[in-house]
Image (tube, rainbow, N blue to C red; front, side, top):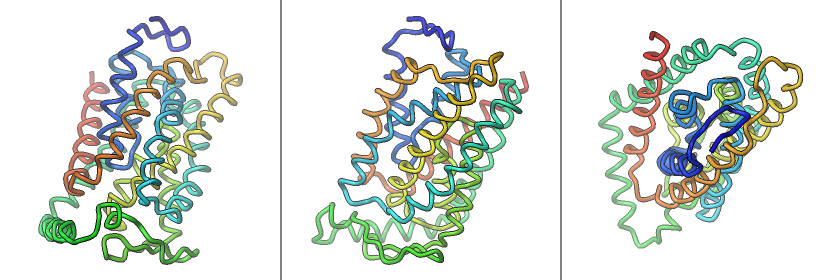
Length: 307
């Protein structure tokens, strides 16, 4: 099947199958998998125009709602965190989208940019895991003990908000209280929105690792919030790319709607299944997976840049 907007020719079954596999594992880490789908589009399908970022964000718009629905159903949405993340990423994504079209239209330069920030985020996540291995082991033991209580799975994984103010967000999860500064989440999300808008993702791939490593929040509780934030910013990103497309007639800027939809259909199924099974996977395992995938993708981009 030929997609005239992107110039890609591929079987219509490949995009949804690839998106399903990526989204299933990525959604467990609170991300859509868009940052992994982009290398597939650029390196495998040969889709390197700036519009690949817009297409990637359209995939996110289609795929994420099913995963968010599952987290809401399981009462694992930290709504104050969601609001802070969305408030920060929305303005950032507009700046990032403009930067992608105006300053990084060259695929080679873009790959270097992508490699740099993915390596930093993934490296920091892995470093924290290694240096705090003993703490992680203790936490896993405590979580195992909690799972043996008489509470049902839904009760033990439910989140209850304690405070939401300009100063602090606080909530309880599995008998523990967690908190973070509201302004800190906002600023982190704003910076992530800029990078996410440039890279063609909602920013969750950046926000989720930093929330885990900087603010020490459990990954089982942040996934719904970061996915919702990514959904809202991706809607804004798709709108902005479409809006500015006429001002860059020499480039392909607007999304390839058909290709993005096929990716989104597979991602929708993968998101739901990943969110459904996340509770059965240890937090440390999810974090390791997220960190290794980020670093692996960064290395791949760096090698392609050096060729």
